[in-house]
Image 1 (cartoon, one colour):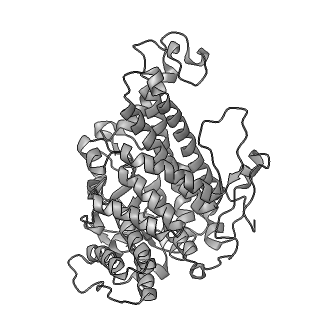
Image 2 (spheres, one colour):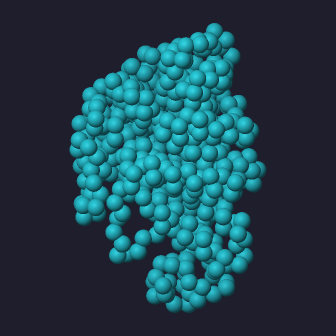
Image 3 (cartoon, one colour):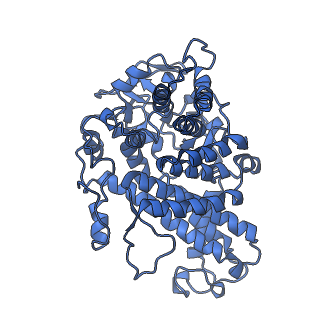
Length: 499
């Protein structure tokens, strides 16, 4: 079921709260599975693995992630404003102004989020590798499935850390209490490890279609792992291998572009064909279902005013709105003062930018379901990697390899979906000039993925940072290693240049 992780996490807690026999905290070894600590009728060993996986997934929608990801990925560019009032959410101000330093709280939140995910994954891997020793009912295939999930989630965490910070402290196991934080490893060495792990994980994961058929939603799929592989190669500018993995996703048939653009972020389209890597949130009070906790992804970015849907952070800038004018995706990207949705006229609060990220807006009919009675959209899933991103990655790789025919075909797939029934919009790109096609693909990524997870790092990898006001070349291609992390490591971690 979709709620397996909420259930697993609750069962995981039972391991610690169980009153059978002597108290868990008095059992030896502390915090580890030991068969003699539990009787046959107590919590099964598999819950240890499921509990750590549940935590790894949950940390990807923690407050620290919800607050920091829109700032580092979007507000850092000219396409998104901090939003809200001038003084609200002040932690984002230095990022928007490009005056941040190693003390920036929001940078530390982002950094810590991914290492928390990594810690959970390392424990899940350790438990999965020992499953046969402690529970004969767990088959090798099931243990491998657990491990493949953890490897994929961990690889995604390391990819995001490398994207933001460059060389990283690579930890691939549960560290002992007395072990120190490892020094930073060269990012290409880490990439090599991730590539090998993901290649192993792919056949040990399920397809998206199988997960949907089983009702086992919320887990990474084969295409999730392939997507991370493709992104790693793309950032290495290994266009041939990036295209191999995007082609594997496209030819798998597990994803497609059949979902209308304006419906992608609706509850009805969760884990639909657009979904490649999606974080599960669910909140249905009338059914006593809550796998979201106090989830704030949509609330932080929601419409500020009437109806009140949130804080108004990460709003589309005047530049983005101007450049997107006439694009069929505009209305599904931008929610502004005076807009009418489902018969309701939206009135913005008095803020500098009365425009908001429509991709974080839950329709009124969803708000009125399941006794929710709220506009904070705690049930709105986070789409970390979408299929259109993969298709545009394929187009970019093909373009860089000189296969302009393939590149144009994939570009047209995305534009055709965006065009919808408006035949006069977004005419097909027919140029045979590589530079012109490259620019068209870059622009398409900008509009298709606006205010999601790609813009800042796309501009950095394209060396187009002149499009970011205040960008400091030679320094801000990477964010600083948080000073508090350097201090906690007793100086083992080193700082990025320029900070």
